[in-house]
Length: 441
Image (tube, rainbow, N blue to C red; front, side, top):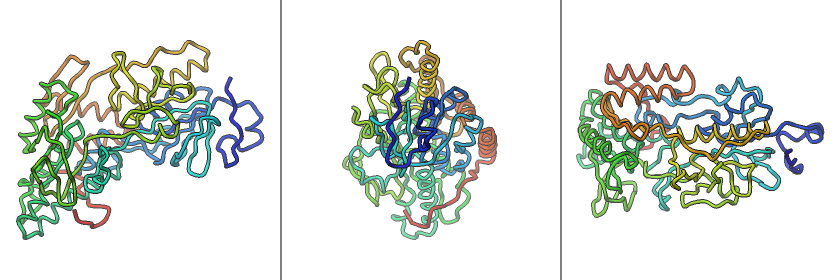
């Protein structure tokens, strides 16, 4: 039923013994990436007569929607991450390898993992995306993005260090630069980040310093487009804008950033001095298209078939942020966690149908339950089922319930809920630790 790959000359996982090379074996499914899509696919293949290998360069699954709360000292990294092996420990047919994938040999059906190779009969690439600087990669060291825990702890270090240095700074101009925080990009991540920094300065840190007033900090949200949360309906966008301004966030729309350096940014003809700049403006896909030598869009996303397979390679699937999948109207699906999860489940069901010689499911269609974004305490916006729009306290509570439910692990759900309740009652944040070295902004 499945073609057996040629034996490689380098060490090969899964086919390095005479028995493994000659005896009939179960189909081998390799999943690269343990994000929302890859992990969902593995969970839905658990217990089926296939040997599943999950490969990730880290040993944990990260709940990215709450990463901004680590960056703004609201939560600790351990509260939004869970060991992959722990999540999949009950799946006897699934094994986990920690390693970095460098290439895919589609002819021999091999995945290069560090100095070894892993053979596959079916391959699922769910390798995610990284932040993009639209061809200005030199900006990254001045304006880090937010895609992994290391990014979040680095941004947290920069934010908290800026307040500490401002406390000892005598020059009012230098102090003003230290207390100016800029977020580039007004999508959900940028809006949530700006609101969280404003709450950190105006509430959690308000009484912690003696020489400075953290409430005087200037928080700017910069967006090249005409409005914040452009993917949301206009009414919710305006509501979010009002909530940001009530929190004290200064929003600048319609002007792109033309330069970023160690001293701040240039916005049109305006120069804004800042020691802490963060980017939430764009993403680029992983190197999957290069590995497969497949057609990709400008963001590096692999153009896939309606069943999420790669053209000319029905045994290879690309899902999540790495895939350019189109909806029935021809528009690309957004790079959201629910999209990746549904794609992971779809591919698992398709493979299960192949194993059972059953009819394959039809083309992938994303079921859109809606989108939400939180702006701050008691402020959020929600657009559900493409029909219902609301904001305020109810949307904020719903946002919290949904995010707690989707966290991996009961312990994480419990500790995050308790931390949020404590912060709500006391106006305090419990993760204000500066780690990663003393380097100044």
